Length: 326
Ligand code: CO
Ligand code: CO
Ligand code: CO
Image 1 (cartoon, rainbow, N blue to C red):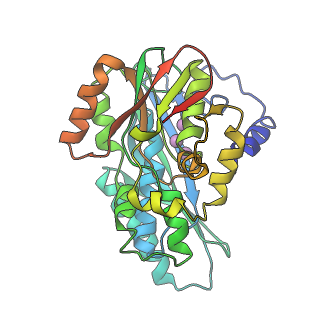
Image 2 (image 1 turned 90 degrees about the horizontal axis):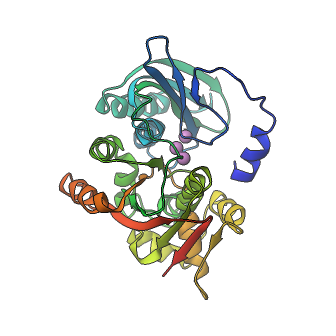
């Protein structure tokens, strides 16, 4: 669903006034947060989607990593999950076993147990998780709180949208796409753990709305302007070369259109670069906003922990919108 369609849909939902609902639907945050009588809070999210790779086990694992990501993006701790699945009856049962096994294995890696779920018959397969966890409201990260002078840190490279589109179209092999598959399989747990030792002012994970779409949520909610340097944004080499010819997924085009008025680009900025920045991601990295004097050390720690794609990609300023510089 495009961000514009989502806005329209949200306007149909009556706002609830439960004081214990600390983070709800209105701020487009990554998950809902509900305060318990004990003062602790529950965090919950749901995400499911159509296959991004042909291999059922890998698809299941990527879908699970993607679903868990919203919990990490808010500095929560996932506890247990439920499968949510749409499976065509005509396909062999073994295939679906592989999808569920991939999901359960990835959840186990995160220390999360898959406790059950729900499956319906559907000609178009879809899979994902409902994830429930705990979160401390005093240390949770939302889209609000970015301040002028902060730095932007991104922990994974862009490119999963265009690469998985090429993969599904048979333009490239699973082997060629392997670096991107590795990126999608990686949990955002370690990145969140490292970032939790810094004063993160705002955070989100990069998924369907693309880097610019999710950054726009932070810019709007925090009432700041975000400036990003194209040359510093980590992008997989294969995505660069595929972007010359396309095709980009439909979601990427929808993001580009929705963000048209919100983002300004340098003069003569190439269309394929715009599309890369808007590319709809699956299981992308964290975009964290933190004080400039802490950003270098944060990236250093991320590197030391093996997250070599991590980079400072820009900064937060007074104003509104997003400014891309070369
Ligand atoms: Co999210
Ligand atoms: Co989500
Ligand atoms: Co977000």
